[in-house]
Length: 447
Image 1 (cartoon, rainbow, N blue to C red):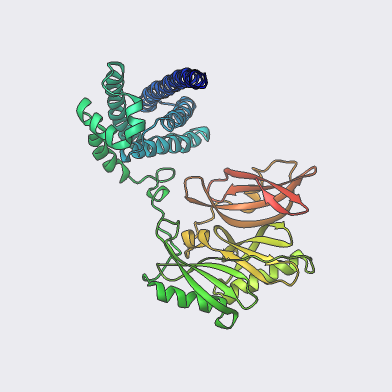
Image 2: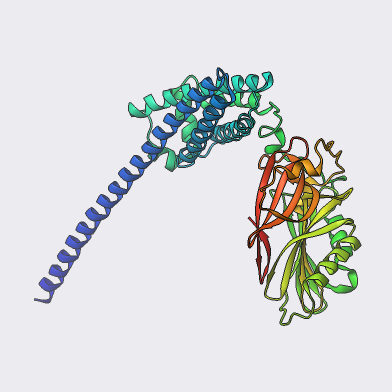
């Protein structure tokens, strides 16, 4: 009887297992089909938007008026952005697609910069049209490649599941088999394209930052360790440990962990090139606020000067848990250099500097030849909103989204209860940017 009972239980369990297996298989198939459908949708949307990019690039070559050109280029900017969105949804990671993404990104940025020229009623130059013609040629190559892949996808010669499971190796093998105009061939075209240098959105330094402030020769780890000890002060160090080399960081650097005399932990990074301080941070509890913001600003400025960073001006700050993080910008001939930023953490109990981060400064700092100011401050004011109550005026270098720089008049003012920063181009009087200043109990921020 007991044996029959056990056999019955086993049979029930087997039936349950089989049913669960079938259900799991069905769910897996449903998930697989849903993924295939999503990838198919993303791919065909990508094909559609790349076709639109090619069409608008062709139209931009024959636009004869700034008004029509602005409309065409704005549409081109939108379609290139949408193409990037759907490209990012495909389960492919390869150098070829990275270059495709770069191409679409730079088409988007460049078309946006040219549309601004048209909006200001400027006609495109011969160089602009030549650049657009080159871009159109590359877009045709990309469109042809995607159309070929579309045909092969429809015929079932490759599937998204294989690409997801096998990654870019499978993709490269399949592409090599299915398309004469493969991404490998397209890569050569993009290599030529990547060397083109444009003034503005297409500047080469968009993707190849030369790190102007990162000067000097490469150093070894032991040299970096010595620099780290000198920066903190040997008398303040109980122990120092090597954490290795961060090769893929924005600034390649040697990293160290330091135990201070009070057993506080300090992390510090020293750049391989030139042995510059990249980052230092010491965390400790700050339980009281004994110094003012102005005093903290001065403490940070004095600290920077002691470390070789002269002529720095405090800009914005954020206060959290008794510690204020202050942004300092370099000054040159009374002009604020906003790209050259250093962040400093100051404890509000005693003014001790707990941290510093110099990435912006190392990327951008250099002695600039300031552009000639072609319009007066009074002329620039004519382009301001008439309701802006101006509180301060200065000159400033501001960065653009394309990592170029513009010399501007900076006007700080209020409209009713709202504070603004307005930047007027010193060369042509254009309004380059408007920032809203947000004053909170914890800091002054902009957006």
